[in-house]
Amino acid sequence: MNRRITGLLLGVGVGVGTVTSLVILFLRGEKPRRFVRERFQQLRGVLPEPAQIQQSTQQVAARVSQLAGNAKDTTQQAMQKVKHAGSDLGEKAKQLTPVGKQNER
Image 1 (cartoon, rainbow, N blue to C red):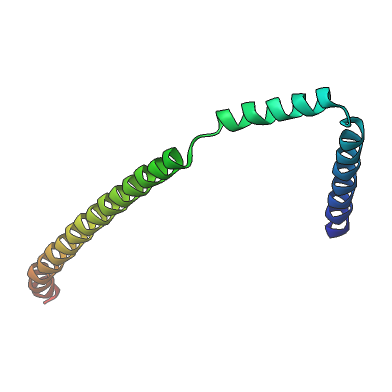
Image 2: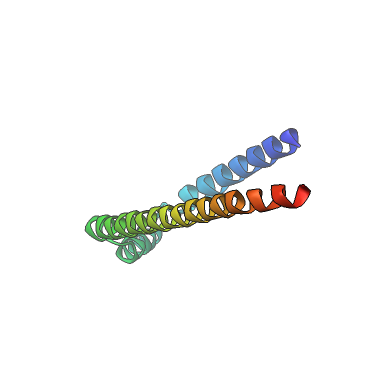
């Protein structure tokens, strides 16, 4: 399977290289160059600005931090409930143990 992936990647690389070479060969005139330049500018216009990316990253980081804190609090509350339930069960077992010993006699 590893050989298949290697062959596939090699084929894709050769294909991309071939297409790139052909595009460069056919773009010798001013009109095709202008077309490519305009398309590139259009694509750049669609991408968000670095400031927008940074702001989004900070918002996501803050939300993740908040969710992690909530998960920690919920886990601690659950652990406390389990401790109390275990303690209560231990007390009940101690109370019932003398009763069980009396019934054995």
